[in-house]
Every structure is written in C-alpha cells, then in structure tokens.
Image 1 (cartoon, rainbow, N blue to C red):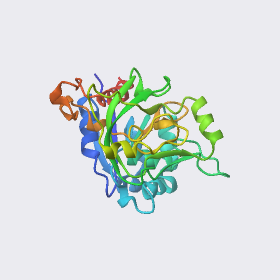
Image 2 (image 1 turned 180 degrees about the horizontal axis):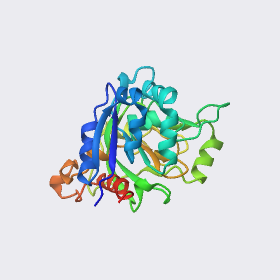
Image 3 (image 1 turned 180 degrees about the vertical axis):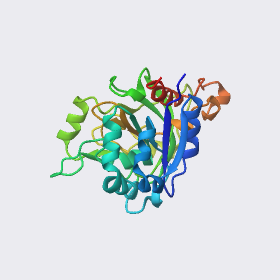
Image 4 (image 1 turned 90 degrees about the vertical axis):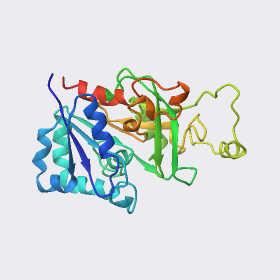
Length: 277
C-alpha cells in the first residue's frame, strides 16, 4: 500500500513532535520532522507531502502569546505555499500549540481583513495551566480527521486553550457551518466516587455559553469547543492531545480495565493517512 508522506513541523520549544511522528508511523505514514527554518529556506519542500501537522509544545517559548511567533512566520513567509497545500486537497492538523498557531493564521478560519480573526484561543478561565484528561464528543460529519469517531478520552495540557469567538454572531455562524466539530463533554461519575472539597469548589467556575462546567470543560471554552475545522473539513485544530493516547497503557486507569485497544487518539491519525490510500 502507498505510504502518504507526513511533515511534522517543529520550532524552538516544540516538544510533542516525537510522539506525533510515532502516532503517524503506527498507522503507516512516512514521517519526516523538519524545523521551520528548513521551510523558510526552501518553501517548495511542502509539495513533497500529503499531510502537514503542527504539533504541541511551546513554540518560541510562547513569547507574546501561545503560537504567535510561529504563526507570524507562517503568515508573512509561508502563507502562499500553505494555501496551495490546502487547495490541493491535502490535510493540515494542529494539535494544542499547533491549534493555537492555526487560529492565528487564516489557514483554519478565514479572516475578515477589516475586523480581524473570527476567533482566538486565550487564557484558561481557571487562571492556571490545566493538565488533565477530558471526555470529548464529536459533532457532525464534516471533519475528515474525526470520521467514524463518536467520543474520545484524551489528555489536555495548556494555559491558553479557551476558544473565544469575536462575537456571538461569529460563533453562531461557525456552529451552523458545522465547524465546531469537537466539544468537551460531561464525564459520568463512577459509582461510589467522591469529589474532594477542592473539586467541589472549582466546579463553581462556569463556562460562557457552554453547558459543561469546569473541570470537564478545562478552560471555559465557549460552547465547550475543543476542536475546530475549516469549511472543507480538511484542516483541523484541537486542544487535546491524540498522540498521547494511541496505546491502551497510556490511559490513566488502564490497570483497572478501562482502556480500549488501541488508544482513542490513534483513529485521528488513521483517518488522515487513510485519505491517501
């Protein structure tokens, strides 16, 4: 079977490129990890690949804002080649910091030049870095990466993951266009489980316009948004880390028999690679 070529784009501060490359390799992708400087020197390298992924981490130390510097490099030097990549029907995936990068370009969400970007990812409502596992629910059938997936259990690790639209009208438009494709969901409590006093206190933090309270919605994202796709469904950004749950032993309660084989996140990479077979 043909092996789709996958480009993992890294920058100073990226730290999830190895896990992401491993996940794509597990499902048959031919993976190469390249530094952003290589592409700035030779932008035509993009043409060799079918899938582009910007992985998680803290690109350029998240200076100014998460993903901002890497996004600016793309906007000012690589926008044309990325638009060609996208127009050719290829796939683009942004995970956590990669999602933050995509949101700050117009690759994922078309930008209104007069009014600015339609949405952003900003500081968590809790006011702290969130590192926890979350239950996720998919919405609609637009996104190629989520084909056949109903729910996932994945980890998050971010300080600026709260999805916020420019206005309620923009949020409605994205919702009606079926681009809000992944959402945080309530977790079903195990029988006999008890929350600590601290957990009870923190659940008083409510999201804006969402039905899922903290910590199930770990950052207070509007309408519980955890992932967004473009109008074609072939560009996808999400805050949770699918590459950190591709094996059942990565599940936090795998010894209790709660893990599935394979891990929930592997299907995201299978769907991407499967598009080019």
